[in-house]
Image (cartoon, rainbow, N blue to C red):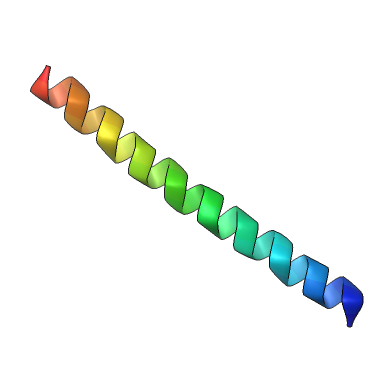
Amino acid sequence: ALAARSGSKKLAIIAVARKLLVVLNAIIRDKTAFA
């Protein structure tokens, strides 16, 4: 149970990090487009 919980937590962190990367890429792309 403990391993499963830590595994899901790791997946959640990865999902959040991936979402942040997508948002950052969009911001950078918009900045370069405006510039």
